[in-house]
Image (tube, rainbow, N blue to C red; front, side):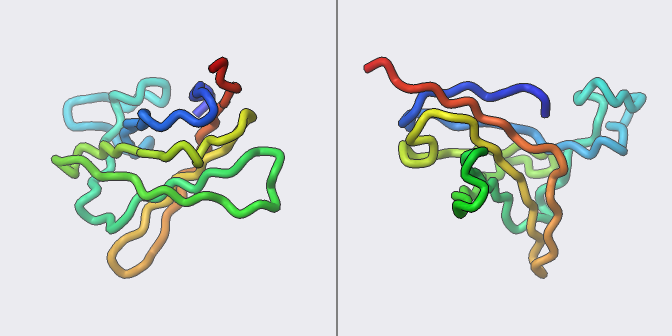
Length: 125
């Protein structure tokens, strides 16, 4: 994901809705286009126990990450998740990285290769 998600420090009335897609499998009736996410098959989240986003400030690589569990929306085969957060998640301005991991019922983990990037500015009020 090359785009940055822009926020203000301490925001809490926000969430991020995202769709997990398999970039190697085309949706039925579509020709796979690596530059068009809508051509990719959404991940079936019925087989996934948890979707977790680990977030940390980019400069603070030694600090522990904050782990936020995403909410899987129905129908689960659409691959749609919502990532909620609290004011403490992005409390200070800076650039944060996020990593999405999927865990199935037996504990197998798959990590999404592309990182999320959050750019957090200071609040004016």
